[in-house]
Image (cartoon, rainbow, N blue to C red; front, side):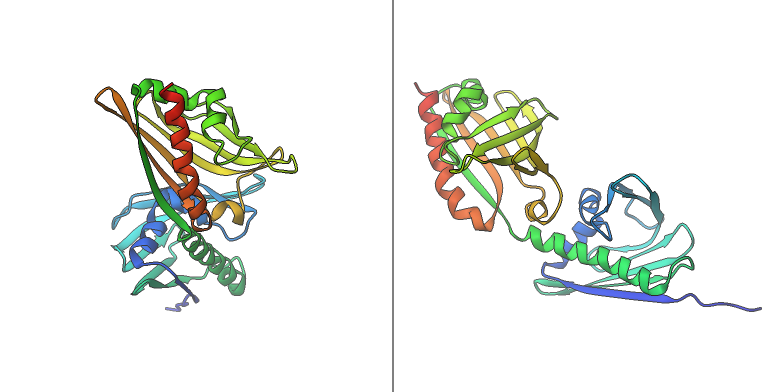
Length: 292
């Protein structure tokens, strides 16, 4: 019987992050939608999987202009967290991925059986580009820092909550971040909201976000989606990816008739000193307004 052997293509990279973080980013379906593309004009709008031997996966890959798309799907064969992942694609091609810890770095080696429709070098370049995107995404996440601030305010939690979100008062207490600060949009859960200011030249800029959660008087969570440049909303590209997943969480806790307001935020390292100065100033201004 005549047999033919499939061409094996191997790609690799070293990522400046511990193996646990690399594994989690590789296998988290939300994260997959952020890095799983071979070029800027493609993306993965949806990723689903059952991460266990025999479990299936389906990552929808599409051109951003909607001109073409396909389901990258298959079955997991072997799942060894932080070490090894093996799966079989829908056309019976095997893929093997090795994760090797090197202290604060991780070496990733990926081998896959080539298909017959496209040149081997084109396949190698495409898969390597996706692996490079993973590396870039993780290493840009390393630029984020977690910051915590809190303040006691002698006012009921609902008053603090309502004052913080009031359109006029918002511009007052956020002035330490930007003297012309204001917002446009809704604080309702799921709503888009723009945080806007103008610079010394009068040019408008700010952040594009949505409200991930809103529990009146108790908790509010803001997730950032992009940048505002003039009237243009920029939600993709290196400027956005460097702080992908950034958030602001506000927790309102009743204490003896007053409020302990806790703020947890993610920010980039280059703005850490600015935030460390501006947040206490802003919270003190909010305290002053609420206690009038």
